[in-house]
Image (cartoon, rainbow, N blue to C red; front, side):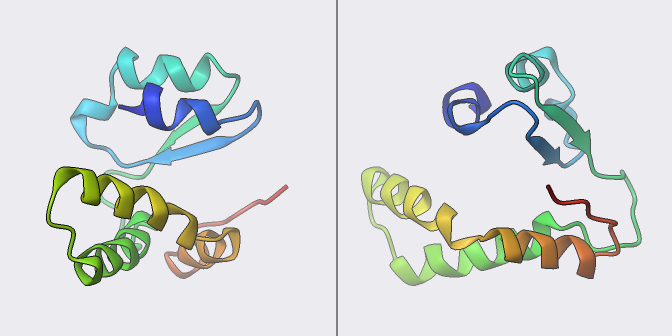
Length: 105
């Protein structure tokens, strides 16, 4: 969950952009993020723009398939190792190409 995976790497001032999955609109998701003095932003529900998370997930999933993990442990290792493949420049590009205005500090 976010409190075990995401929260440990967040720092005050970080912005977390998340999709509008109904499960994400809960105190269980919100509290670990806002409790760390971070901002939680939801993507528009029905945006004509490509949500920035889609090209990021597409890239990650290509790597996951290529790795061909055959056990839960291998899958955890592959997923964990793959997250660093999305750079700040990638995130900026995904946002801009999706039609979002990006402000980077």
